[in-house]
Length: 279
Image 1 (cartoon, helix red, strand yellow):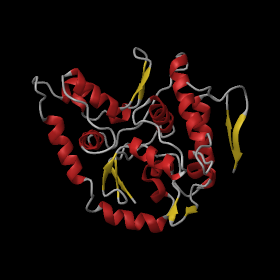
Image 2 (image 1 turned 60 degrees about the horizontal axis):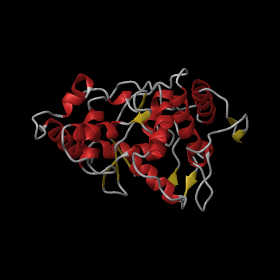
Image 3 (image 1 turned 90 degrees about the vertical axis):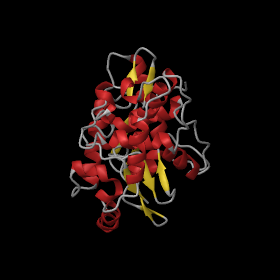
Image 4 (image 1 turned 180 degrees about the vertical axis):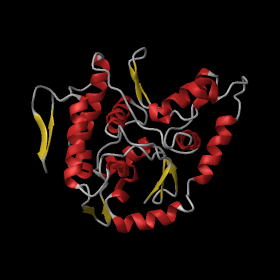
């Protein structure tokens, strides 16, 4: 694991947001919320679940028309069918999750002290399959995205409240690894996630308006018009790395799981509203 945000250096200072190495997760969250409250004073906090459509009225109007006939509805239906279909041993996904897997998506990702790993919902889905003698699913699209979409759909309206235990050094290290990934420059374009989704949020890149970081994970899996299908959050991480001409990390590897841990923590207090539709 690479060194994470060492000493008391500042990773960035732009537009009023300073990212301090020694800040606690709670301080990071409070600072980011304050930054966006100042940047978009007319956007209510709860509306950040709608991504770029929370800050751009014209885009929102087009998106609301799409949501009248959501392109991800078939994926939800497929996901429910897959979720309810028993494995060869007679058990099902419901046997692997609390509350039978219904209405629990807001609990993910979490840090598991036993394994020392960040557990995402998709990694838990495949762990369930393997524990029941089934082959794991591919990570970025297809059945795993459909099952995740169904589980997120049953969790709509539930509030994200990801915990980073202050007394667990391994959990804090995972959070810091995700934070480092978010703010670190990479690729031939030498850009970070924060360059687009913090410092330049609301600005245009080509014809697209850059979305704010708060609320990024609430609406996944996502049907993207550019994909023509549903995809997972890690598929989107891949796309972002490719766009800055950086080599993507393995889906559901430690790097992306740590990023998802940080990314989702930054959406604490917001509702799950996935699956969603985006350009």
